[in-house]
Length: 336
Image (tube, rainbow, N blue to C red):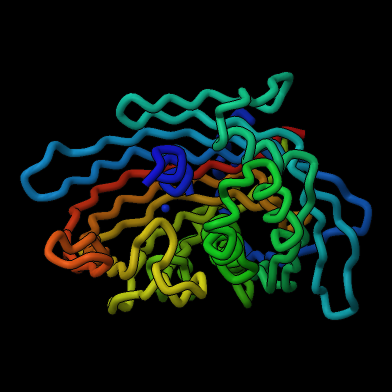
């Protein structure tokens, strides 16, 4: 397997905060209340540290940081409150350390190096736009647009054509909607007061993993001033689970061998924790700040073909188990 392939797949597997918490005497109703033409600029930062170990081998440690600046423009609001938001990628920066591999790329004034295929693929996203629809309660209904971006990523790195179907699954509308569910927790369906709790759940199919369920619990803490805006602070906790069962990647990509020679993978989530907060502008119902921390312990079982030395052209299947520990944080903050 090429190192660039492994690195890219590894990169794949959001204002100052001033608190003026005050008592909330009357129940507060929070709904999405955006107006067509409103524009918001956000910075989203994803940081992750991961350690993966195969039996008898030294652990492989990976550290990465991905920063994206995005412009959100309200494209329209339907009579039922459904709001459409266009989201454009203005800047993308990637930093990664994995063994001897180092990636340092920032689309702001920097052209990807000719041999830096990861930077070239992420650079292809800059300037592109996706579209998200939200219900009046803030739930992400759907996300579209990545289907048009993936071909540009493949064009930037022709060698990626072999895993194009995996990229399409990774950036599918369903997978992207699942990610948005972590960034945009559902707003309460009725007026709330400090201490009130409500739950939400999102399911998605993730390439090389299968069915993934994210459960979140949100609690209204009180009113705070964040970046000069009157906001409702919601503390959130939750967990991520997988249904288990091997996923045959040859079926994902529609070939006999599967991408990169991998045949089957089975990821079991042994333990997970989600904790963080979201600050919602009381006037617009839109986010001002979100911070989410993730901790996960997983066991990954791989089945892959290897040539059989005893028979010309025949193969044997080997089975390997990898223990993975991962810590990640995702921040989204309004910068304009």
